[in-house]
Image 1 (cartoon, one colour):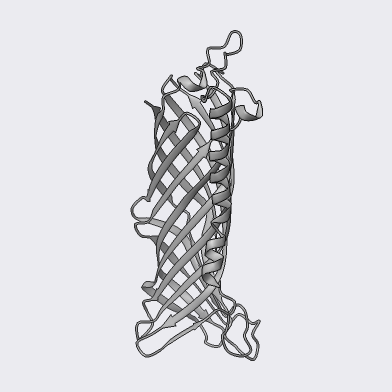
Image 2 (image 1 turned 30 degrees about the horizontal axis):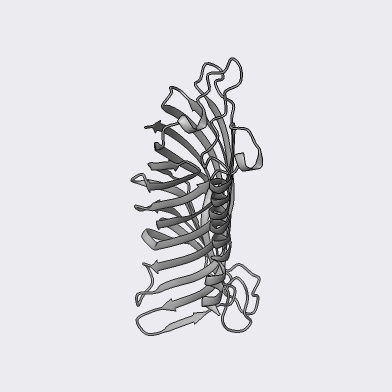
Length: 339
């Protein structure tokens, strides 16, 4: 059953590939096979689309705000309360990296790599438990600690296809079906905080590192890009607006090592689900080959699956109330060079 779900998730991407190939074949056999070089409006010095440099290299700085990744699970035994435990890791941090993109007439393909900056505190980690079986809705344990981001990475690869001209739109428009992969690896450590138990007076100090958390998201997405080129504006060589909206099938992996527990306690989650992603941006041409851009990005991931608890003496696996989700809002500044 699990294999069927994963195979079905690729159907939207296969359909988009078929659509892209089919429309390209139609364009090649019923027309010149190249994007039209539409003349610029009177008085404009805008560069026609097909004369743009095929390669673009971008330096990128990304800042996450009000972002987190979290998971929870229920009680596998009666009274089966959900949640039994919830852990919330903040993600507010700064990342940097590069994107390289190559245009092939109607298609373009790009790869982005980002890594986290060193020595970052991402906010306050929260750990909540509802472990009183007599009162399953009663919060019994609550803890907060600082949270440190260890070296973490993100990779994105995508392929899109220009179809604006096939729909009769002018050369100023971009309309592109897109498919691709987003991969994220977060490494977080909860440290130096306190924990409160409602049945024990006072706060329990938690000095040093308490939880080491590793998370990997694989997101296979399909969507659409839209853009509009205003041409030269305000002394700029060009001014462009662009957006993207996509849906992804997601596979998630978590590993959570409780460093203060005895007997090498480790919990893992294997989950699948969905993600919705949207971005909006603007790009200003400082020179013929140099652009400065700004993007606002939002990603929401929700998955369910199985939870496994392992110690030196036993292991237990179950699916009751297992949920892993992430909400990521970011602002990105980029400097692009065309060559």
